[in-house]
Length: 179
Image 1 (cartoon, rainbow, N blue to C red):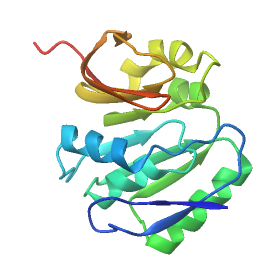
Image 2 (image 1 turned 30 degrees about the vertical axis):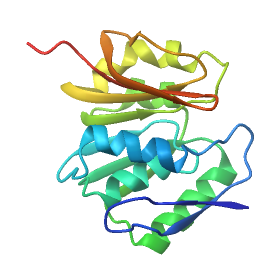
Image 3 (image 1 turned 120 degrees about the vertical axis):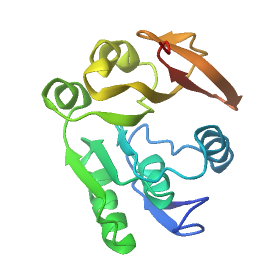
């Protein structure tokens, strides 16, 4: 079992176990540092959704930086076990772990989030499948972070405002049109 390090906030430098699950690739430290520089280091009071949680590192990183609510959605049983263990170790009361399919979660949830992290398995069409459902859960002025195997210009009505690339990972920060 490998491990991943939280890079900032209250739990800075804490290591979390990463389950051996097919296609699981935790967001690298450098990419997370860039993402949280873009979002701002302090996420106090924000509600965050980590839709394809995997290792949960994006969600735990957000919680470490003050997010008041973090929902981790994952369907792989091995990854879920590791998420529950990490939440217990960190005593992460603001983190809710949901076992389930991302599309079904988006279709049924009645909450809105300020930040959605979207890091699905590659080459399976997940971004295209969840894109039409994101407006149901994302605040109009909310942020969408997406990782993909290729550059993106938009996801639904949200346009890329920042982007980068590290190795095989293309990462994007998107936002809807500001009125």
